[in-house]
Length: 393
Image (tube, rainbow, N blue to C red; front, top):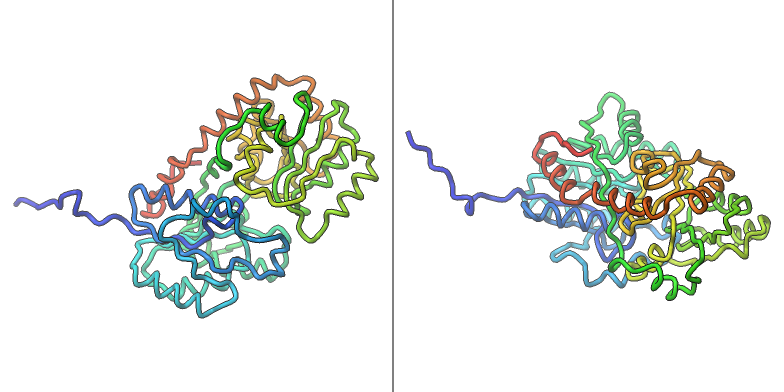
């Protein structure tokens, strides 16, 4: 008997709905969701359910959530319908997803405030639809028992969980208890942020640095877990006359407290602060001007800042916490130091500027960027979506 095989052009492409922030929302999670949609869209039909309001204002003490420089890169067809404070919007979007009949829904998970909306969405879409939770952070940066409870109840609704570090895999198992869904550990892909690579000379000229300055960059939102205070307390121990350049928005109006630390430590002359959110079209200036990026975090699942540094060919000096030891290769594309240790951080900064082969380390950083490709990540996500195993770790 002859079996008719449908022509490839007539086969239905898999349908994947993604729930999460995309451009023009700012910062790394939006970048990752936008790029994920692009990669899945190579072989699948993709529906994006994004947000009309992403956070209650009291839980987002920064400035505006939108980066105007990203407006032109907003994904075509993205639905900006979900309002974190409007349950009616959750029900309406669940109905829209259900009508579209996806094979898989990917919930982008990074913060507890979306636990209740995600629970409602999951319970209102077709129960036969496969659900994945792509977890940028399994836990919370400023934790409490009720945040843990909400997060666990949301994540346990998944058919599979994707994490980006061994420490996050362990935490997911711990949080989920006996009802843990299958967990897949992938690398977090390179963050190709900014509008292109710029030379160190040009970047320094535009930012007002001298050509021969030694510059260590602390980049991104300034929150307690990021450890800027640790870097500042390290800087009076740095002997290589390096500048600590801080480029990022300060949450909770804490800029004055950090300036006080600078005065107490006597580092004001070797410190430069740009206390604002750095839009995408200025990112290349800061990474281009830097010699090295410092990430003295107290805790972190995985670091988009480190992966952005690699994209620009910049080595990273990071705390050995969370997933950072999985991507920073000691002595090759960076150095790892114990957390909460200003003296060790200062020693690593001096080692970089006075002993390391900086040209070789920059080449190694670019090599690392090439290892964490979005193409490979997208292929792994499609395999998981189809119910298979991933080979990307």
